[in-house]
Image 1 (cartoon, rainbow, N blue to C red):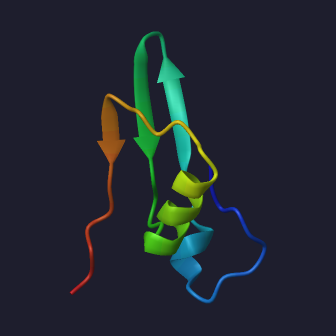
Image 2 (cartoon, rainbow, N blue to C red):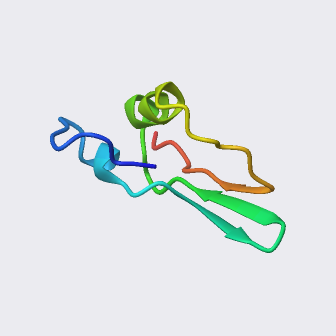
Amino acid sequence: MAPNKEKYTEKNNYSIVTKITFGEVNMLLTGDAEELSEKEILDAGFDVKADIFKVRTPRK
């Protein structure tokens, strides 16, 4: 699902975002993708419905 562009200013937006389906279980793994990458995924219309959703913890 991501990355969607060849060039980003933030390196975390190069994170691989993928959805894995095993039987009837769907897992969405987002790496360190940031808000821009998340918006691109939604704008592209990808199916992000998942039973397991791994999210990043924001740095402080």
